[in-house]
Length: 482
Image (tube, rainbow, N blue to C red; front, top):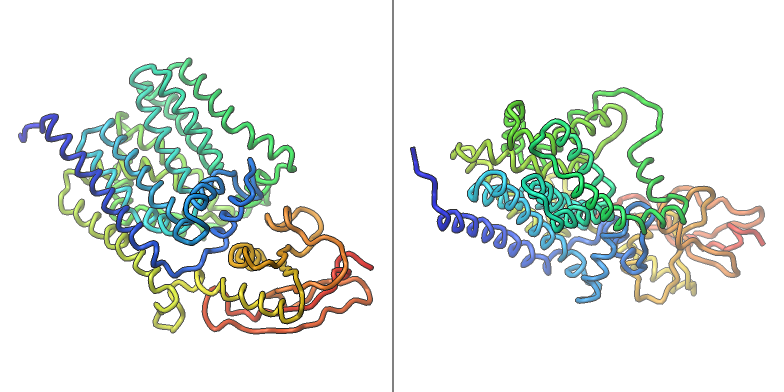
């Protein structure tokens, strides 16, 4: 039997893991200045939230907007500074995963788990695109580490950390609720994962204190975020059993963690019957996958909705692979290839094409061009206000045309607003005309006697939309009457 490595050797192995995380992060940051992809609709929206600091926003809690505000306050509103926080936060999460692995097993497992998390395809993609999952995963990993520490011994400091992590995670994305639910289930089924009532109480109070301003914001804004979240998850909708979404959901999980690593996680689940480390990791992940599998039977479920489960899944997968050298190398080879390749594709976002001739990253290209063309048409028409009912168009309007001097507004709607721009920046009554930019074949439903006049139309040849775009000169009275 090979003797266990001593403390110095274990520390050296762990440092190598941290160095691996640093190298992966450096690769991502070094290529960011050359990223040629436009901001996706959600990214532009999150940036805009950061320009209007609040305790909540239409579709998500506020943390991502705050993070982008801090980053752009330091370096400006360029794409580099908007996307820089992503690889840095993921690096922090990978370090936490390494600490979890070391605490539950040993330094080698921790090092492998940390580098393993840093290189999974989901993190590779999340390091390029602004997502609320990114800060939530950091908070989930920190909460797991705090829970593990508290299960070993009582600690006011770790109790405060646990509460702050859960509360802050909820400010990132409400899917953080999976943590307390999974932790309670683990405590019920595994006595060794329980924390003291005092520590649990402190953590709960801190979490509620952190989250309270967002709950108050929701109350003051008609529970907008909670309502949107429920609608997005199809809660309350008529149940329609369908097996079609299940393969797509589970296929997505293999894509998030990588095919070999996620297969190793699934292979490790039977170990949970014996309790111990595998049992804890299974309870912190499998219930999330199962809950969303049930959701997939009745409505569409995105693969990233189960992102929190992959923190524990990566560690369990590494525990299975750590003594299977060939499979371990193969898993890292596959995931590292994706980690290296994905940032490179963004360097050629406006030229890299599929065999069909379409751009590989078409959905991330062409948005700014539409905004600039709309601005040119507005100036040509002598108009100072651009309007659209299309969230994708509006999101880029507010980013690309931020210094244009044009007034940017959402087309007025009735009832519950369909997006943030309609909620906070709708067109208001007044005189004169505005330029309405739309991909709809139908014009606005104007008041009697008012007819919009089309002043331009074009069809983008490349990019996120190949649908015809129309620019209409519309009197404000169209929506509000004379």
